[in-house]
Length: 571
Image 1 (cartoon, rainbow, N blue to C red):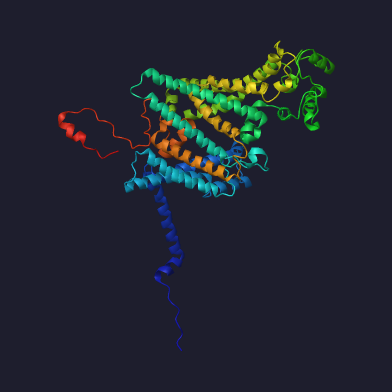
Image 2: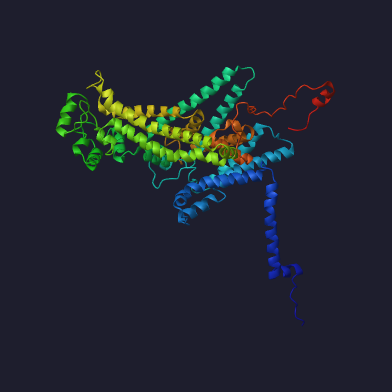
């Protein structure tokens, strides 16, 4: 019986199996990949692929830079477990960079498809808003797919144990509040620009509108800073942990004093009583650690009212720095470094904050000079003018932060020691239980310190106000409203994030002048591929969800009237 011959392999399949064929195929693939950059560079800056690539790179930098900051400063980047986990999380399809690339690049792709199909006008802000709303909904859905949907530096990380608001709050709450504040500011700025450029209004009207806008930024910062500082003292769990740590680095308050202030608010620490042994010992241990007698922090011995009763109590304790005034001794409030003098305490802390602020604000004012091509050219032409201006702006910002710190300490000391307890009508009647409570000296200091914002320039006031507003809004939300288990609240948060993200993308394309500060630069770079031009008051405001009309042509000679009446076919 003849042996069955095995089926012969085709020539193509046999050639692919050889090493030479595999090497040729690999070389062809490499050549194709080398041709990709040429095709990518040939694309316009507004192409959806370029928008997605720029947005992905920005999102990746925002996610990785906070995680790598410590290693970058030390000069040693090591592949630690935390770094590997961060890279795996952020480079995944459910990471923050990919989600933002889908939101911006997907919206641009949808607009491009609508334009080619004839259902979309490239000058329609309404269609742009709808397209980016659909892509933003998909992007937020990708973030929700993650088991732990938090992004370092963008959304607050869940703490190791659930306690208060921070433990059970939504992981993307900070990001949503940031989008909400920036979108609302874009709406307000767009309205201001429309009002200030109306042809039937007098020039004084436009100047008045711009002046009110600058003052409104200052008032908003004043209100937000008052709420944030009060929450720092009494409800720190309602603020982002990194923000609380930053305030602690500037305030330099002993944690035992903060716990004592919260115990006064809760009613577990009171003058003349020892309601809780552990909380009553807070100031006693603080006094002994500073080298003072423990009686100076004993609530049973501290006088609650000013007057002769306070002098008798201080004579028994051997304290001579508060004649005729009751309450906690200033030495415990100020700390060991500044002693009993309220003036030295406020001045010293303000000076220390000034030098700390110089290190913070020097890069803030120097980086724009280095990153902007126009400012670099000006730096080469007039180096002394640019350096003097940068130094002045840095010193002004440092003075603002130093005044903020000095004012809050000066107001607290004046309220509980220097002014209010010495008023004849209140002396001996007003209890220090009230002055040292949540509605006393601390509240007065929180309401006064924000006035330092008027040291800054109007443009800086707006950017600083936009920075603190999300933190202030977060401190106002109850834990039950923003809990991860609250499904309706989660749906509301996602809806707000989608709408605000879509609005910002639409504004970056159709009305970049309504954006301010960092959001203006980031969104203009993502959508246009270049830094935004300097804001100008003569820019035409964004159309209110209507296709842009062709501007009226200037008068022409009669022989050109027919040609002028015909549509040009260009938008």
